[in-house]
Structures are given as structure tokens and as C-alpha cells.
Image (cartoon, rainbow, N blue to C red; front, side, top):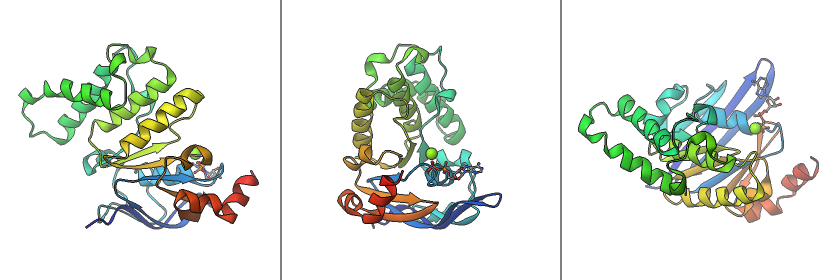
Length: 246
Ligand code: ADP
Ligand code: MG
């Protein structure tokens, strides 16, 4: 069967009396790149925090691979098969790029695969190398993480997130702070990653993701305004109005 890998039903979040997200029902097909877009304050980060387990929703349900995961604590998400990009604050700047990825992989072995034998640990170095290659950082493997350019650091964060071999990868504005050139490289990388797994990308800039997304969801004032293929979203009158009005 090829049902959605993730689905949300009536998803909502309140902060005190403020409704940041309300009644969002949507599904995310497997092995596709779906972007969640919307103007500032639309509820994108709130949505991201709910589907990545950072917040428990005030209303609604979340299902992953057909299983209800609503309220599952965030530290269990990697074991489920869901990863989000590491924040640079979790990277050791004095250690090399390769060492950082190896540590990320190792942390998962000790946490989730305790049955793995110790003599399999050297395999982690191999795995770390292949993850660096996947994000195009092989040539920087021996460089201290702190010396990498901003765009390279974001790629390193993605490599570390991939260490858990997620079937679903979640990225919130991965190109924030990147130069135009770094942004192009990052978009190509994200497109490539979506060939082997499902990617959900939260992004403010609609133009940036139009070309690489299989599907888009548009949030506005905390509600789902539209969903569809890029050409449908591009032609959607409400979406155009919302983005023009910014
Ligand atoms: P986006 O990522 O689309 O810019 P957010 O999800 O960050 O939007 O925010 C949606 C709305 O919820 C905004 O009005 C924001 O001010 C509000 N909000 C977000 N997080 C909090 C919070 N922790 N407490 C109170 N209000 C919040
Ligand atoms: Mg945001």
C-alpha cells in the first residue's frame, strides 16, 4: 500500500488564548517533497514543532505510517523514523565534520540499538563518511565544524539528522541566512534527499520552493488555505492575494 507517511487531523495549537494553528487536516505522501508555506505568522513553525514532537497539540491527532503518535515525546522521534535538522547549537565546533556525524550516529546506536555489538561500532565511521558524501561535504570531512561556511554547517546539520536513517526528514527554513549561491546548492541537496525518503520543508519564500516541491500546503492565519501541486498553488487566487498583501 502507498498511503500517506504522515497525516494530521484537526491539528491545532493555542498559546494562552491565542490560536496559532487551527483545524489543519492534511496528509503527506511518502517519498515526496512537500513544502509548507505561508506569510510570516501563518503558523508554519508551530506546525513544524507539532509534527516534530517539540509541542504536544492542543487539539487534533498526528499519525505516522498509520500509527497515532500524538503526544509522543520528542526524544522518541528518531526511533520512530522521523528526524529534523539539528540546530547548529548541537554541533561541536572544535571537532571535525566527520566526528560530529559519527557522534550523532553513535548516540543513536547507544540509545536505540543496544543490541548492536560493540565490534560494529567501527562501521559508524564508514556510515559517517557516506552521510557526509550524501550532503556533499566529503571534501570538508577533516575540517573543524566551527570553521565551515554557514551553508556547509547547515548541510552538516542535515547529515547529522540523517544519521538516524529517518524515513521522514523535517526541515524548517533550512536556507535561512544562506547566500544565494548556498541557497541553490541547498535546494538541490534537499531535492536529492527526497528521492530516498519523505521530506517536509517549511519555508517562508514561496518562489524558492515552487521549483523543487512535489506538493505545497499553504497556511494563513493558522489555517490551511490551499494545497496542491506547484502549478495549482501558483494559480490559486487566494494564495496570490495573501502573498501580495504581505
Ligand atoms: P510562522 O512560522 O509561519 O512565521 P509561527 O508558527 O512562528 O508562524 O507563529 C504563528 C503565530 O503564533 C504568530 O502570531 C506568533 O506570534 C504566535 N506564536 C508562536 N509561538 C508562540 C508562543 N510560544 N507563544 C505565543 N504565541 C506564539
Ligand atoms: Mg517560522
